[in-house]
Image (cartoon, rainbow, N blue to C red; front, side):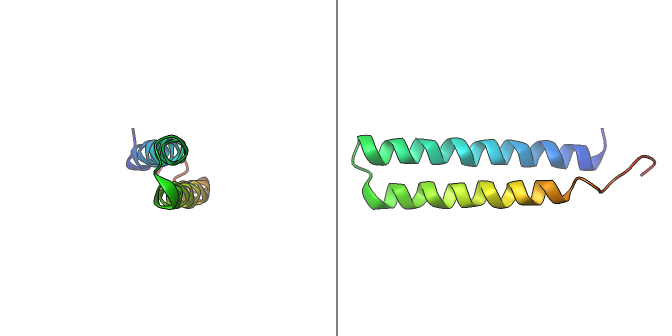
Length: 67
């Protein structure tokens, strides 16, 4: 396993975490009265997941064979 592969795995794990956390915050804001702060935390988590997703897509062309 190369360092780039490990980096990709960790980025995918972070994207999954931020997406799960956003869903958790959105459902908590609706159900237990988290209110606007819960919605804001969920939105920031979605933005972080989107940013990491965009970063992940830029890694596609790097690290070809022999590197």
